[in-house]
Every structure is written in structure tokens, then in C-alpha cells.
Length: 64
Image (tube, helix red, strand yellow):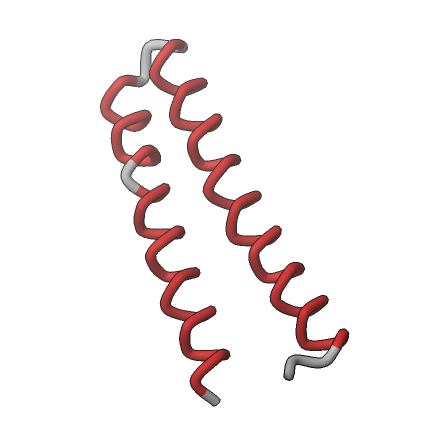
């Protein structure tokens, strides 16, 4: 059974991951509509990478 501290740590990790992905997404949209389309696409590619890295880190924590 997971302790309350472990659950809190996982929740903080998920919050950080989703915040980083969300900020990347919003930054991408901002760049796109400001005319920097190539930079917007580049930053937009970070979103799935951030989410995938976060998923790997969270799965790794549960295997320990």
C-alpha cells in the first residue's frame, strides 16, 4: 500500500509534468500566432516529449 507521502510526491510530479507540457503548448500557440511559425512548431514538438518522459519517470517510480 502506498503511503500518503508517496501519493503526494506522485501528485506533485504529475502536476509538474502537465504544467510543463501545458506551458510548452501555450508557448507554441503564442509563437505560431505571432508569426514565428517554425519556432512554434519546434516548441510544439516538446509537448509529447515532456509527457512521454514524465510517463517513463512515473512508471519507474512504481517499479521500485
